[in-house]
Image 1 (cartoon, helix red, strand yellow):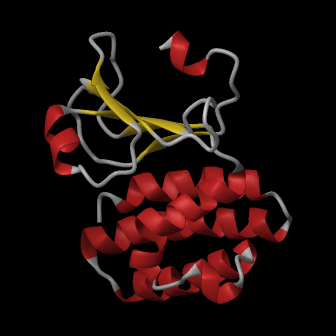
Image 2 (cartoon, rainbow, N blue to C red; image 1 turned 180 degrees about the vertical axis):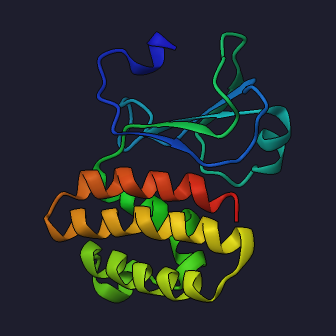
Image 3 (cartoon, rainbow, N blue to C red; image 1 turned 90 degrees about the horizontal axis):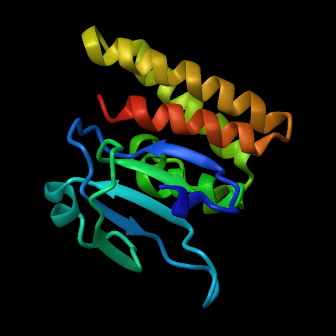
Length: 168
């Protein structure tokens, strides 16, 4: 594990899958430039490694030293790329809000996403309604941080949302 983080600043620790299995495969994301370190590392169990062949990964290999749960991602990308990743993986499909439509103005994106989720939470009942309310709470924090210009903290709040959304 130390070789994955040596000399690098981790910008996000994400959980992109709801899987309780211990990872046995490590996928690394593409590099921005040849000779640079990977943008992210995803820890996957055998089933998810096989189920996700379209994930953009430069390398996939077994690593007997893994002890993280499947779906854990160590992310080293800049904040703007983290935000776009959230939009690509779950935010747009859940809310219909697309960053390009708002010229990448992240407060606008998160504000609209909040409005959609808030309205959906108000009309949902049972377990989905409760989970959506938790997502709305975390999205509210992301929206507030984006309004204050703190996109790094907004990305952190979206990581919380991402974990919660998997249970919907």
